[in-house]
Length: 455
Image (tube, rainbow, N blue to C red; front, side):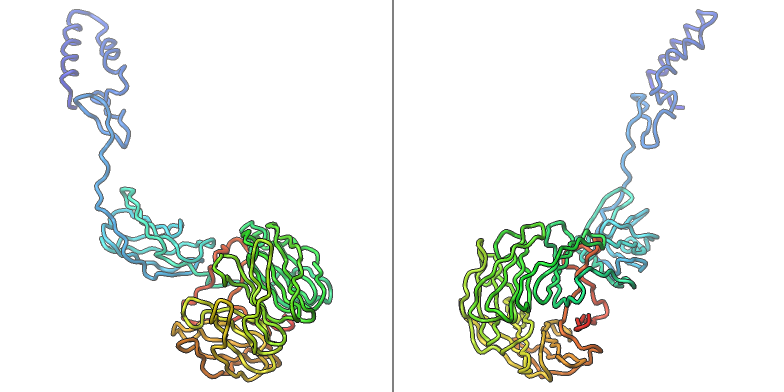
């Protein structure tokens, strides 16, 4: 045992005292030295596992931190994987040693092995609440943390659907023509709006797959197409619906709780398709509406509702189908896609002035065109068009070309008679965050979900 100068001096004094006294030496030693519980020179055990004895001051002091080289994260291989986990992930970088930990979106990799100072691997953990770009964090044995945002992509694959889906209540004999899905009451959970032939019905989600169903809100007439958007500038999602039998447009203002107040907007004639987009640059959605006669109208969004209409173009297909928006030209601006109904055409219209639209392209399709969807199918970064054909179990596919041009239609078997085409399915359970994240096609394939007359 090493003793300090103070300890040796005290020992000499105690020794002389013991020579002069016949008893009490043991008590004197105990009271003078062992009474100090932190005297590590006498009792080294008083220091904890993270301390060492300073023999000069006879006190415990913290151990110096372990020495680790700086760590660097360079790549994650593969850079994407399923949220169900189980796959091997390899991470490259530098400074890897000892016991390393890895977290992806807060979930630790299991069975982490440091294979070299520049590489480690582990097994992806299950993270059912994760989706989309996710942060990767390395933690060294010295507790240094290095993170890289978006270094890994969690996909929803494999998508799993209930074998006994929930049936949402609706009046017997009611036909739901269209479904809209988004968070309309501000609780972060996607809700469902069902568009019926003469009214709407709301299904408000609680985030766990259960819904509060509203009674039908009757509007009358013969409703055709609906769209969701903030047309009043209050950051709440309103509903705009066309009427194909009466010269009016319905605006349903959202109070922020998913309750809609109906307002009828007079129009020159009955209507067909409608889409919402900001055409004026004020960050408030405007309505592009196609009439039954083939006239394109603009109604401008404002704090008081929709104002107009202004005529933007004529000569669109009569009795057209469900319109859509997509940037098929790649210029950062959306074009209007119009399925031509019984005219058996699909058309693309683009903005050509402050209040003007012109036809960019018209292509024939092998049947009545009832709805259209723009999606990249060929992997060439150009949007292709998929058109639902009435009376057929087929869709028409038109390959996108430079400048928004389209190739000739190719018929593809759909297996059912489609009416509406949907690019994605909205998630109504909170385990799928409502952040626009969808199933990522890891194999380079795409899927299209069709809606038939019978569901």
